[in-house]
Image (tube, rainbow, N blue to C red; front, side):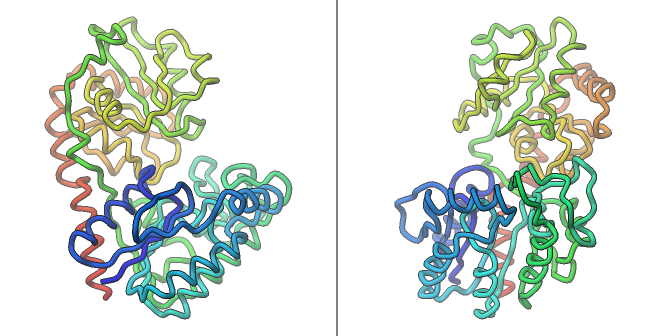
Length: 399
């Protein structure tokens, strides 16, 4: 097989590692594999850079003013399509095609003309809305009929002047429903159900859970507790790439006001401004790309808490389980799908009292009560090798 994947990033972040892992597996099986990406620079064979800093800057400015995300980068996209046209691709696998680097009408016109199988893994909701990548937090359902007057115009991909959500919605519907041989993949049943309510519902929709590297994310011993003088404390962990309201940052601040003296919150992924405003019983750690450091933290806390208000399928939950740490999460998006009653607690979204009560139940039971169940669940459902095998199987099926 000859497979091309397209994503905003390669070997960075959760989606970038999914692309990288599939790419490496295909090469190891003696298939041909290529990846087109927008951000970063990789000096490796079979990788194709789609955009550059100037192009992305222009794309970003156009989005900020005119709300036309995905409608710039014409020259960069044309040059990319010329390059891949020489590769005789059998399967096109799309991931995130938003991110200021690609012109989606040009891409879909090309795919329609090629008449080759296309798989599109949706990592968020951008593909079927007129603007936003998430809408659950504000409870918007305009996308089920037709977007207009977007209430999240100033959120990613932010526009600070014009609202083009109606035209964006119509353009996406036109191009994204133009293919006859498209299969949609979602990482959660929740997102699959959302797609079923959208203009993409006519397509075959499959669910393939995201996977993580269980050789990296596993229980380890470290001096983490000693380093922060926390040996006798009950540690509550929160992790995010960017802490904002929808990720539940405010709930940790509220929790800090009602914690007992032996309970401490650890938050990973904070910026300088957030670090300066933390209460004394919250220890803040800046964002880290060091997976070894993250594994040490996951392994040495008592509970991982994810008060997310909207999420597709949070990788942080999977990482915590793999390190043997139980998860307490709000019932939002696909977050609740990651756990069962043996490895954590699911709480009604937004209920701080129930969130703290669930943390208390985990504390009462003790981490050892959950540890093996957490690890077993990660091995059974969230091993990256299992995810990759399912994608390779899907490739073979459609070829």
